[in-house]
Length: 466
Image 1 (cartoon, rainbow, N blue to C red):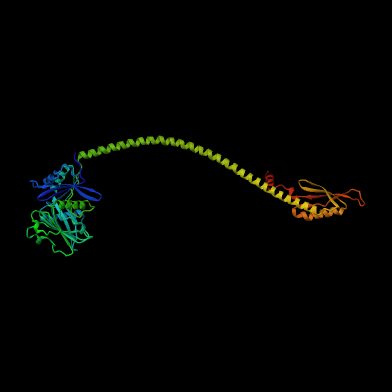
Image 2 (cartoon, rainbow, N blue to C red):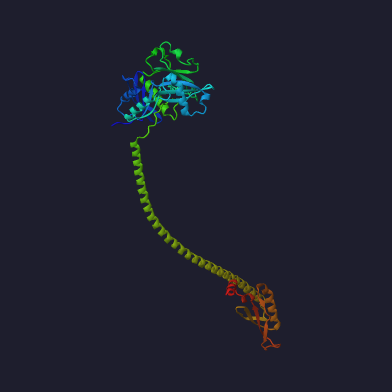
């Protein structure tokens, strides 16, 4: 059974074919399998791609192709000629500009470009081209291998240093490829500048062909040897990377994979055109959508029916609950009325109780004052025989030897009890005819309580309300 790789890079040069299967995990990309062989006898690029894929029986997954057989160059256009043009129109204009150099018709070529810096009057672009027919054949070959073509690029001009320690400083890399010499210059926080010379490195003379080889002493230079046309001895040993070395080759491919996996790779990538759907695919999609719509309609109808029954039951339950709530509200109103009446009755009873307690306190004080006066006025000439009481008055029954003694007692009682709310009436006397002068005299003193003649406040209110 075939398995899919997360990512596959094919490196196709003039003298060899390389396939690298990679895997991304924990923020890093690693090579899981690396295969390489000499080029096959066929001359066309699609055949080389097919041979590179067949080095492993695994499905390629998403495929990136790096090949030195596509044309790449840096071109400049006047700024005024770019005014008002869209990105696609600029790319097509570059294709027409590159026709004399690439020998590819602008309408027959697949073109990709990325902008670089200019000099204020012109804008520089780095572009790559290949025939549309080749791109379509390569796309077909990869789909036959159960893969998906993501893009095609020239392997030169990677805008990142191979030595990661140089990323925070100025650096330069000189790359020697079949049919191309590429200079890449980078600075911290700036887009790398790429210059391309479309010719094979000529032994003994290639140094004169490399653009901007005059090096600032503060700039570190890397060298990439990627062609057998130039002896390794002609390249400085310091900072040299050779793709003949397997470790250097793996590092080169991983660095490319990291650049391609970024949100925006600053290299021209030729991508295949989107293929229109076939009639069979359209019909299959329409059938799937129709079946899905039918299933959705049936599901909605079943749901509506079930929900309708549920809503009917819920409506009946809510109506019963509403009636119960109305009954409970009526009962609550009745209980509220009864409660208010009871609170009113309790208030009246409390008022009566307070009045009675006040009357009792006043009555006890009166009786105490009465008895105090009687005790102080007690003499041998006056004798209190009996004290009677009714609802409205107290009656003193006594004997005195002379009539004025009764008047004196009544006056003393009136003076002492007027502050207690009692009215002392003049005494009534009756002679016993037992002594000279009519004495002894039997007398009665009536002490009236005017408060006792009126009902308590609550009782008065009840009587007035009837």
